[in-house]
Image (cartoon, rainbow, N blue to C red; front, side, top):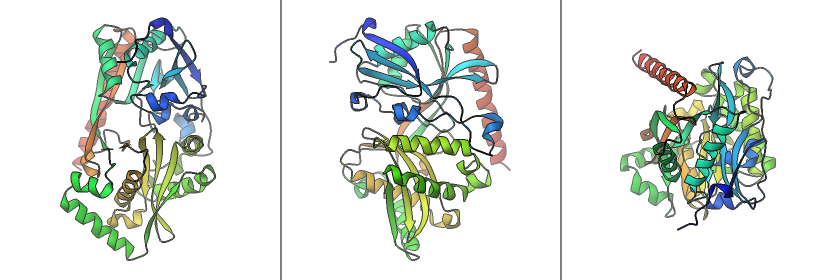
Length: 386
Protein backbone atom coordinates (compact mmCIF):
# COMPACT_ATOMS: atom_id res chain seq x y z
CA UNK A 1 0.00 0.00 0.00
CA UNK A 2 1.56 3.30 -1.07
CA UNK A 3 1.73 6.25 1.29
CA UNK A 4 -1.06 8.81 0.94
CA UNK A 5 -0.29 12.33 -0.24
CA UNK A 6 -2.02 15.49 0.96
CA UNK A 7 -2.97 18.35 -1.35
CA UNK A 8 -0.23 20.47 0.23
CA UNK A 9 2.38 17.98 -0.94
CA UNK A 10 1.32 18.21 -4.60
CA UNK A 11 2.26 21.23 -6.68
CA UNK A 12 0.82 21.75 -10.16
CA UNK A 13 2.30 23.95 -12.88
CA UNK A 14 1.49 24.65 -16.52
CA UNK A 15 4.70 24.45 -18.58
CA UNK A 16 5.48 25.14 -22.23
CA UNK A 17 8.26 23.76 -24.37
CA UNK A 18 10.03 21.65 -21.78
CA UNK A 19 10.28 20.75 -18.12
CA UNK A 20 13.05 19.47 -15.87
CA UNK A 21 13.28 15.76 -16.56
CA UNK A 22 16.42 15.26 -14.50
CA UNK A 23 14.59 12.71 -12.37
CA UNK A 24 13.52 9.83 -14.61
CA UNK A 25 11.83 7.78 -11.88
CA UNK A 26 8.36 8.70 -13.17
CA UNK A 27 8.90 6.71 -16.37
CA UNK A 28 9.63 3.58 -14.36
CA UNK A 29 6.96 4.09 -11.71
CA UNK A 30 3.99 5.40 -13.74
CA UNK A 31 0.88 3.27 -13.98
CA UNK A 32 0.84 4.13 -17.68
CA UNK A 33 4.02 5.39 -19.39
CA UNK A 34 3.15 7.86 -22.17
CA UNK A 35 5.88 8.77 -24.71
CA UNK A 36 4.16 12.06 -25.56
CA UNK A 37 4.53 13.15 -21.92
CA UNK A 38 8.34 13.29 -21.90
CA UNK A 39 10.09 16.63 -22.10
CA UNK A 40 11.65 15.97 -25.57
CA UNK A 41 8.13 15.45 -26.96
CA UNK A 42 7.14 18.97 -25.84
CA UNK A 43 10.05 20.74 -27.52
CA UNK A 44 9.02 20.64 -31.22
CA UNK A 45 6.79 23.58 -32.12
CA UNK A 46 3.29 22.39 -32.93
CA UNK A 47 2.16 22.21 -36.56
CA UNK A 48 -0.08 25.03 -37.64
CA UNK A 49 -3.65 24.22 -38.58
CA UNK A 50 -5.77 25.83 -41.25
CA UNK A 51 -4.29 27.32 -44.43
CA UNK A 52 -0.72 27.11 -43.14
CA UNK A 53 -1.20 23.36 -42.87
CA UNK A 54 -2.17 22.83 -46.47
CA UNK A 55 1.28 22.37 -47.94
CA UNK A 56 3.94 24.76 -49.11
CA UNK A 57 6.91 25.53 -46.89
CA UNK A 58 7.18 24.03 -43.44
CA UNK A 59 6.11 26.45 -40.73
CA UNK A 60 5.97 26.39 -36.95
CA UNK A 61 3.11 27.07 -34.60
CA UNK A 62 2.81 27.47 -30.86
CA UNK A 63 4.76 25.62 -28.19
CA UNK A 64 3.59 22.29 -26.84
CA UNK A 65 2.61 22.35 -23.19
CA UNK A 66 1.60 20.19 -20.25
CA UNK A 67 0.37 20.17 -16.70
CA UNK A 68 3.11 18.80 -14.45
CA UNK A 69 2.82 17.66 -10.86
CA UNK A 70 5.66 17.61 -8.35
CA UNK A 71 6.02 16.97 -4.65
CA UNK A 72 7.36 19.63 -2.32
CA UNK A 73 10.89 18.25 -2.74
CA UNK A 74 10.67 18.70 -6.53
CA UNK A 75 10.13 15.02 -7.38
CA UNK A 76 8.13 14.72 -10.58
CA UNK A 77 5.01 12.60 -10.13
CA UNK A 78 2.70 13.48 -13.01
CA UNK A 79 2.66 14.90 -16.56
CA UNK A 80 -0.43 15.51 -18.71
CA UNK A 81 0.33 16.91 -22.20
CA UNK A 82 -2.27 19.46 -23.32
CA UNK A 83 -2.60 22.95 -24.74
CA UNK A 84 -5.17 25.71 -25.14
CA UNK A 85 -6.80 25.93 -28.58
CA UNK A 86 -9.78 27.52 -30.23
CA UNK A 87 -12.72 25.15 -30.61
CA UNK A 88 -14.60 25.68 -33.88
CA UNK A 89 -12.82 29.02 -34.14
CA UNK A 90 -14.68 30.49 -31.17
CA UNK A 91 -14.52 28.85 -27.76
CA UNK A 92 -11.13 28.33 -26.05
CA UNK A 93 -10.67 24.84 -24.68
CA UNK A 94 -7.84 22.62 -23.49
CA UNK A 95 -6.91 19.74 -25.76
CA UNK A 96 -5.02 16.62 -24.78
CA UNK A 97 -2.70 15.46 -26.23
CA UNK A 98 -0.95 18.40 -27.90
CA UNK A 99 -1.57 17.22 -31.49
CA UNK A 100 -4.70 15.03 -31.45
CA UNK A 101 -4.49 14.54 -35.22
CA UNK A 102 -1.25 12.57 -34.79
CA UNK A 103 -0.45 11.97 -31.13
CA UNK A 104 -2.05 8.68 -30.20
CA UNK A 105 -2.07 8.77 -26.39
CA UNK A 106 -3.84 11.43 -24.31
CA UNK A 107 -3.57 9.62 -20.97
CA UNK A 108 -1.69 11.45 -18.20
CA UNK A 109 1.49 9.78 -16.92
CA UNK A 110 1.19 9.56 -13.12
CA UNK A 111 3.16 7.61 -10.55
CA UNK A 112 1.28 4.42 -9.72
CA UNK A 113 -0.87 4.49 -6.61
CA UNK A 114 -1.37 8.26 -6.59
CA UNK A 115 -3.59 8.80 -9.62
CA UNK A 116 -6.52 10.11 -7.56
CA UNK A 117 -4.48 12.64 -5.57
CA UNK A 118 -2.56 13.98 -8.57
CA UNK A 119 -5.56 14.19 -10.92
CA UNK A 120 -7.63 15.89 -8.23
CA UNK A 121 -5.04 18.66 -7.97
CA UNK A 122 -4.64 18.93 -11.76
CA UNK A 123 -8.38 19.44 -12.21
CA UNK A 124 -8.46 21.94 -9.34
CA UNK A 125 -5.58 23.84 -10.96
CA UNK A 126 -7.41 24.07 -14.30
CA UNK A 127 -10.60 25.19 -12.56
CA UNK A 128 -8.81 27.95 -10.62
CA UNK A 129 -6.32 29.36 -13.16
CA UNK A 130 -7.95 32.35 -14.91
CA UNK A 131 -5.63 32.07 -17.91
CA UNK A 132 -6.61 28.49 -18.79
CA UNK A 133 -9.87 27.14 -20.24
CA UNK A 134 -12.03 25.03 -17.95
CA UNK A 135 -13.16 22.47 -20.51
CA UNK A 136 -10.77 19.74 -21.66
CA UNK A 137 -11.30 17.75 -24.84
CA UNK A 138 -9.35 14.54 -24.32
CA UNK A 139 -8.47 12.35 -27.30
CA UNK A 140 -7.28 8.74 -27.15
CA UNK A 141 -7.52 8.23 -23.40
CA UNK A 142 -7.14 4.71 -22.12
CA UNK A 143 -10.62 3.92 -20.81
CA UNK A 144 -9.54 1.36 -18.23
CA UNK A 145 -6.98 1.07 -15.47
CA UNK A 146 -5.95 3.36 -12.58
CA UNK A 147 -6.01 6.71 -14.39
CA UNK A 148 -9.46 6.06 -15.86
CA UNK A 149 -10.73 4.85 -12.48
CA UNK A 150 -9.43 8.06 -10.89
CA UNK A 151 -11.32 10.20 -13.42
CA UNK A 152 -14.49 8.22 -12.71
CA UNK A 153 -13.92 8.71 -8.97
CA UNK A 154 -13.54 12.49 -9.38
CA UNK A 155 -16.72 12.53 -11.45
CA UNK A 156 -18.60 10.61 -8.74
CA UNK A 157 -17.50 13.24 -6.19
CA UNK A 158 -18.85 16.03 -8.39
CA UNK A 159 -15.38 17.53 -8.95
CA UNK A 160 -15.64 17.24 -12.73
CA UNK A 161 -18.09 16.20 -15.40
CA UNK A 162 -16.80 13.35 -17.56
CA UNK A 163 -18.62 12.73 -20.84
CA UNK A 164 -17.56 9.94 -23.20
CA UNK A 165 -18.03 11.07 -26.81
CA UNK A 166 -16.69 7.98 -28.54
CA UNK A 167 -15.26 4.67 -27.39
CA UNK A 168 -13.49 1.87 -29.23
CA UNK A 169 -11.01 -0.94 -28.78
CA UNK A 170 -7.37 -0.74 -29.83
CA UNK A 171 -5.27 -3.74 -30.78
CA UNK A 172 -2.30 -4.39 -28.49
CA UNK A 173 0.35 -7.03 -27.90
CA UNK A 174 0.53 -7.81 -24.20
CA UNK A 175 3.49 -9.73 -22.82
CA UNK A 176 5.33 -11.58 -25.58
CA UNK A 177 8.17 -12.71 -23.31
CA UNK A 178 7.79 -16.24 -24.69
CA UNK A 179 8.68 -15.01 -28.19
CA UNK A 180 6.80 -13.98 -31.31
CA UNK A 181 6.33 -17.50 -32.66
CA UNK A 182 4.71 -18.70 -29.45
CA UNK A 183 2.62 -15.52 -29.23
CA UNK A 184 1.17 -15.90 -32.73
CA UNK A 185 0.56 -19.60 -32.19
CA UNK A 186 -1.47 -18.74 -29.07
CA UNK A 187 -3.36 -15.70 -30.32
CA UNK A 188 -3.80 -16.04 -34.11
CA UNK A 189 -5.48 -18.64 -36.28
CA UNK A 190 -3.64 -21.30 -38.26
CA UNK A 191 -5.10 -19.80 -41.43
CA UNK A 192 -3.68 -16.36 -40.64
CA UNK A 193 -0.24 -17.79 -39.92
CA UNK A 194 -0.30 -19.83 -43.12
CA UNK A 195 -1.29 -16.82 -45.23
CA UNK A 196 1.50 -14.65 -43.80
CA UNK A 197 4.13 -17.36 -44.27
CA UNK A 198 3.06 -17.71 -47.91
CA UNK A 199 3.39 -13.96 -48.52
CA UNK A 200 6.80 -13.88 -46.88
CA UNK A 201 7.97 -16.71 -49.16
CA UNK A 202 6.65 -14.89 -52.24
CA UNK A 203 8.46 -11.67 -51.35
CA UNK A 204 11.65 -13.55 -50.61
CA UNK A 205 11.57 -14.93 -54.13
CA UNK A 206 12.52 -11.39 -55.24
CA UNK A 207 15.20 -10.82 -52.59
CA UNK A 208 15.88 -11.66 -48.92
CA UNK A 209 13.82 -9.81 -46.34
CA UNK A 210 15.47 -8.03 -43.42
CA UNK A 211 14.42 -5.63 -40.69
CA UNK A 212 16.57 -2.57 -39.95
CA UNK A 213 16.07 -0.76 -36.64
CA UNK A 214 17.26 2.86 -36.84
CA UNK A 215 17.61 4.33 -33.35
CA UNK A 216 20.80 6.40 -33.53
CA UNK A 217 20.00 10.12 -33.84
CA UNK A 218 22.24 10.50 -36.89
CA UNK A 219 20.31 7.74 -38.70
CA UNK A 220 16.82 9.12 -38.07
CA UNK A 221 16.63 11.72 -40.92
CA UNK A 222 17.43 9.21 -43.69
CA UNK A 223 15.10 6.58 -42.24
CA UNK A 224 12.36 9.21 -41.87
CA UNK A 225 12.80 10.19 -45.54
CA UNK A 226 12.32 6.52 -46.45
CA UNK A 227 9.14 6.46 -44.40
CA UNK A 228 7.81 9.60 -46.13
CA UNK A 229 8.39 8.09 -49.56
CA UNK A 230 6.66 4.83 -48.68
CA UNK A 231 3.71 6.58 -47.05
CA UNK A 232 3.16 8.78 -50.10
CA UNK A 233 3.13 5.73 -52.40
CA UNK A 234 -0.12 4.39 -50.94
CA UNK A 235 -3.66 5.51 -50.28
CA UNK A 236 -2.48 8.30 -47.99
CA UNK A 237 -0.60 9.70 -50.94
CA UNK A 238 -3.67 9.44 -53.18
CA UNK A 239 -5.74 11.30 -50.59
CA UNK A 240 -2.86 13.71 -49.91
CA UNK A 241 -3.00 12.95 -46.19
CA UNK A 242 0.57 11.61 -46.20
CA UNK A 243 3.09 13.70 -44.26
CA UNK A 244 4.99 14.44 -47.48
CA UNK A 245 2.19 16.81 -48.52
CA UNK A 246 2.16 18.64 -45.19
CA UNK A 247 5.69 19.90 -44.49
CA UNK A 248 4.78 21.46 -41.15
CA UNK A 249 3.39 18.15 -39.89
CA UNK A 250 6.41 16.29 -41.27
CA UNK A 251 8.73 18.71 -39.45
CA UNK A 252 6.88 18.17 -36.19
CA UNK A 253 6.98 14.38 -36.59
CA UNK A 254 10.69 14.31 -37.45
CA UNK A 255 11.61 16.60 -34.56
CA UNK A 256 9.55 14.56 -32.10
CA UNK A 257 11.09 11.23 -33.19
CA UNK A 258 14.58 12.75 -33.21
CA UNK A 259 14.15 14.31 -29.77
CA UNK A 260 12.88 11.10 -28.23
CA UNK A 261 15.60 9.08 -29.97
CA UNK A 262 18.22 11.13 -28.10
CA UNK A 263 17.00 9.52 -24.88
CA UNK A 264 16.46 6.06 -26.37
CA UNK A 265 12.69 6.49 -26.61
CA UNK A 266 12.13 6.29 -30.38
CA UNK A 267 13.23 4.28 -33.39
CA UNK A 268 12.24 3.76 -37.02
CA UNK A 269 11.82 0.22 -38.29
CA UNK A 270 12.34 -0.42 -42.02
CA UNK A 271 11.53 -3.70 -43.77
CA UNK A 272 13.91 -4.19 -46.70
CA UNK A 273 13.61 -6.57 -49.63
CA UNK A 274 17.23 -6.77 -50.60
CA UNK A 275 18.22 -3.10 -50.95
CA UNK A 276 14.64 -1.94 -51.50
CA UNK A 277 12.60 -0.57 -48.54
CA UNK A 278 9.07 -2.01 -48.71
CA UNK A 279 7.56 -0.98 -45.36
CA UNK A 280 8.41 1.28 -42.44
CA UNK A 281 7.07 2.33 -39.06
CA UNK A 282 7.67 5.09 -36.53
CA UNK A 283 7.89 3.75 -32.99
CA UNK A 284 7.91 5.61 -29.67
CA UNK A 285 8.97 3.99 -26.42
CA UNK A 286 8.14 4.68 -22.76
CA UNK A 287 9.59 2.25 -20.22
CA UNK A 288 8.61 -1.24 -21.46
CA UNK A 289 5.77 -0.05 -23.73
CA UNK A 290 6.12 0.73 -27.45
CA UNK A 291 3.66 2.91 -29.34
CA UNK A 292 3.35 2.09 -33.06
CA UNK A 293 2.94 5.70 -34.09
CA UNK A 294 2.67 5.56 -37.89
CA UNK A 295 3.04 2.90 -40.57
CA UNK A 296 3.70 2.91 -44.32
CA UNK A 297 4.34 0.39 -47.07
CA UNK A 298 5.18 0.14 -50.78
CA UNK A 299 1.84 0.29 -52.56
CA UNK A 300 3.25 -1.49 -55.64
CA UNK A 301 3.69 -4.59 -53.47
CA UNK A 302 0.38 -4.33 -51.61
CA UNK A 303 -0.75 -7.79 -52.78
CA UNK A 304 2.08 -9.23 -50.66
CA UNK A 305 0.99 -7.28 -47.53
CA UNK A 306 4.43 -5.81 -46.71
CA UNK A 307 2.88 -3.78 -43.88
CA UNK A 308 1.63 -6.95 -42.20
CA UNK A 309 5.02 -8.61 -42.68
CA UNK A 310 6.59 -5.57 -40.99
CA UNK A 311 4.18 -6.17 -38.08
CA UNK A 312 5.38 -9.77 -37.80
CA UNK A 313 9.06 -8.86 -37.90
CA UNK A 314 8.64 -5.98 -35.44
CA UNK A 315 6.86 -8.35 -33.09
CA UNK A 316 9.74 -10.80 -33.40
CA UNK A 317 12.25 -8.02 -32.71
CA UNK A 318 10.40 -6.62 -29.69
CA UNK A 319 9.80 -10.01 -28.12
CA UNK A 320 13.56 -10.54 -28.09
CA UNK A 321 14.16 -7.35 -26.07
CA UNK A 322 14.49 -7.92 -22.30
CA UNK A 323 12.82 -4.58 -21.48
CA UNK A 324 9.70 -5.11 -23.63
CA UNK A 325 6.26 -5.88 -22.21
CA UNK A 326 3.62 -4.24 -24.45
CA UNK A 327 3.01 -2.91 -27.98
CA UNK A 328 0.18 -0.42 -28.54
CA UNK A 329 -0.95 -0.28 -32.18
CA UNK A 330 -1.80 3.42 -31.82
CA UNK A 331 -4.95 3.15 -33.96
CA UNK A 332 -8.07 5.30 -33.73
CA UNK A 333 -11.74 4.34 -33.93
CA UNK A 334 -11.61 4.09 -37.73
CA UNK A 335 -9.42 0.98 -37.56
CA UNK A 336 -11.10 -2.38 -37.01
CA UNK A 337 -8.80 -4.11 -34.50
CA UNK A 338 -9.58 -7.51 -36.04
CA UNK A 339 -7.64 -6.39 -39.13
CA UNK A 340 -4.39 -6.37 -37.15
CA UNK A 341 -2.29 -9.31 -36.00
CA UNK A 342 -2.33 -8.45 -32.31
CA UNK A 343 -5.50 -9.90 -30.85
CA UNK A 344 -5.39 -8.44 -27.34
CA UNK A 345 -7.40 -5.27 -26.72
CA UNK A 346 -7.24 -1.97 -24.88
CA UNK A 347 -10.35 0.17 -24.28
CA UNK A 348 -10.04 3.73 -25.59
CA UNK A 349 -12.23 6.83 -25.47
CA UNK A 350 -12.50 10.44 -26.58
CA UNK A 351 -13.97 12.48 -23.74
CA UNK A 352 -14.99 15.95 -22.62
CA UNK A 353 -13.97 16.93 -19.07
CA UNK A 354 -15.73 19.95 -17.60
CA UNK A 355 -13.75 21.23 -14.61
CA UNK A 356 -16.73 23.30 -13.54
CA UNK A 357 -19.03 20.26 -13.67
CA UNK A 358 -21.95 21.70 -15.64
CA UNK A 359 -20.90 24.88 -17.40
CA UNK A 360 -22.42 26.28 -20.58
CA UNK A 361 -19.04 25.91 -22.29
CA UNK A 362 -18.88 22.25 -21.28
CA UNK A 363 -22.35 21.51 -22.63
CA UNK A 364 -21.53 23.36 -25.86
CA UNK A 365 -18.39 21.29 -26.47
CA UNK A 366 -20.23 18.03 -25.73
CA UNK A 367 -23.02 18.88 -28.18
CA UNK A 368 -20.60 19.95 -30.93
CA UNK A 369 -18.47 16.82 -30.49
CA UNK A 370 -21.49 14.56 -30.66
CA UNK A 371 -22.70 16.30 -33.80
CA UNK A 372 -19.26 15.97 -35.34
CA UNK A 373 -19.19 12.26 -34.56
CA UNK A 374 -22.68 11.82 -36.02
CA UNK A 375 -21.63 13.56 -39.24
CA UNK A 376 -18.49 11.41 -39.46
CA UNK A 377 -20.48 8.22 -39.08
CA UNK A 378 -23.03 9.39 -41.64
CA UNK A 379 -20.23 10.06 -44.15
CA UNK A 380 -18.68 6.67 -43.44
CA UNK A 381 -22.04 4.97 -43.92
CA UNK A 382 -22.70 6.89 -47.14
CA UNK A 383 -19.38 6.04 -48.74
CA UNK A 384 -19.48 2.41 -47.60
CA UNK A 385 -22.62 1.93 -49.71
CA UNK A 386 -21.31 3.60 -52.85
